[in-house]
Image 1 (cartoon, rainbow, N blue to C red):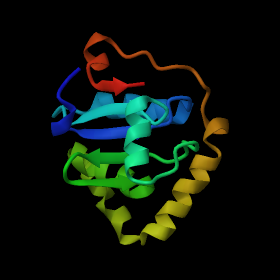
Image 2 (tube, helix red, strand yellow):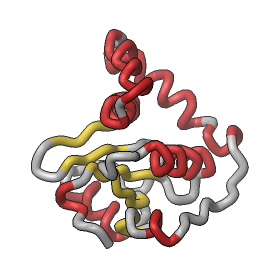
Image 3 (tube, rainbow, N blue to C red):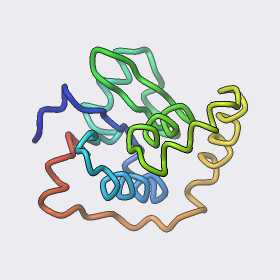
Image 4 (tube, helix red, strand yellow):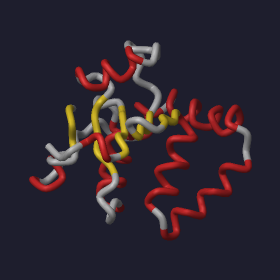
Length: 136
């Protein structure tokens, strides 16, 4: 496992097909090796949630955490990931024009329906990508 303390950690629902699709997408786009991943159900994910007084039983929110710096939730996490990926994805800054409560409403709508939106097949990372997972 890589040194996660110097990375951006993406916490995701390990049982969600949509979430697994986005993890795979980020892995493929992460040319600068900025991200690592942990499921919210893992011990690592549960510790992250507990330490911040966040919900530990519902896994409908994605979190992006930069240790010792910040964490973002929902739409702000998505926009920050896009910004960090750079290139064409930096155009996501347009989404920052919307207030969080509005962009989070869209996020919540997708989150509520995520189990219907994608099949629940498991993503199997290759050997190199497995190093980017803290716990699943």
